[in-house]
Length: 66
Image 1: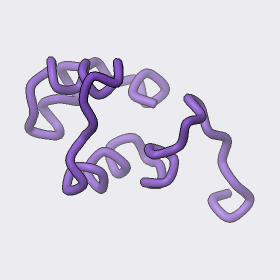
Image 2 (image 1 turned 90 degrees about the vertical axis):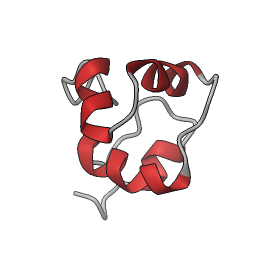
Image 3 (image 1 turned 30 degrees about the vertical axis):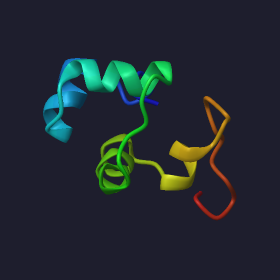
Image 4 (image 1 turned 180 degrees about the horizontal axis):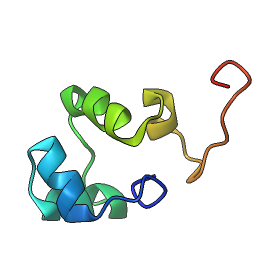
């Protein structure tokens, strides 16, 4: 989703007030974001929190979201 949003890890990290390595860990599955970061991540990526929690790496918008 980060790449689809055209954001570098550094820009994502700065926007979320975390280290770049934290973003990398989220993306590789080494760590998961804290619940309080999910809203910020969803807003940054312009998606729903459910999309972030999905196993689908590139969820398609649902009819409700369109």
